[in-house]
Length: 186
Image (cartoon, rainbow, N blue to C red; front, side):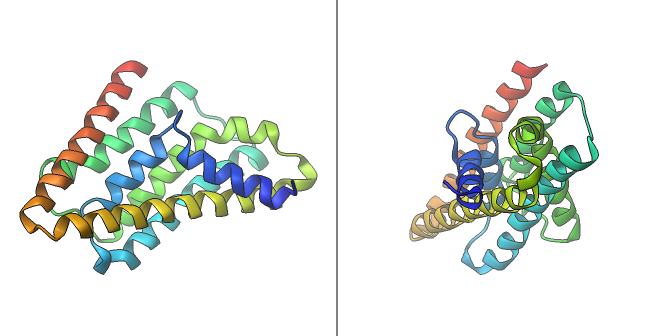
């Protein structure tokens, strides 16, 4: 398989891998409170998350940045839990620049979780193409999750009284999974 296809596939699988659902949970928590009217904002946030993730990979690969694996692995579920708070507390999530910056920061944290593995497997002559195609794969997978959650929100909203229950239930499940992950990593 060519480099572009291989790393695109790897990026897509990185987000959808059942053995590491942190991206999956984070994107669901990010999208859950919104509908199709906010799709443009959601695409922006997902892209910021991918950009943050990519910046981490670039920093690790080209600048040899290192962070404590313990803290990164602990911060990942913390970012997921924090993303669920507006849902669990039934407050309207922020849609301002602060939310955009937070999403970028969360992407950076998540990227450091995968960065060591990624830097080991990338060949120096393929680094640019590998990083770019991996980011495209991550972005594509995240956009698929966004679309699926928006469609589910739309279908549930056909019965308006069910929408808040749906969002609260899914948000609480993800929140408690994140809390379990935090406790396991402490």
